[in-house]
Image 1: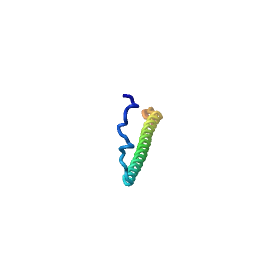
Image 2: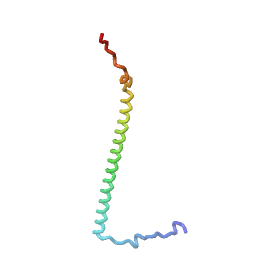
Image 3: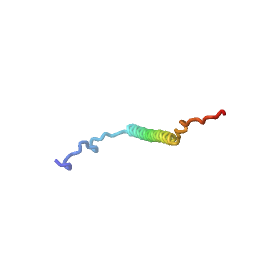
Image 4: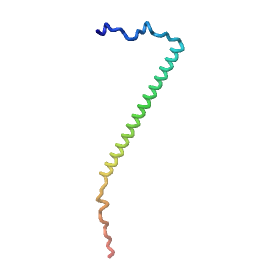
Length: 88
């Protein structure tokens, strides 16, 4: 049996239920609520990605600053012997 010979499982034209005005309005309301929910979730996801990026960038910046500051320090200054004062 080929695809052209197969009958559709549901014949919408013949067996489709007739929807009244209240049912159509309810379906539109549900669709609007779903669209609003999707938009809210997209905003939350974008904000979460921005927050994660900012936190990651701040961690890398702090790590880089600490490495840079350690390289700038001169540890030999701490180990130099103090100059002896002659009391003569």
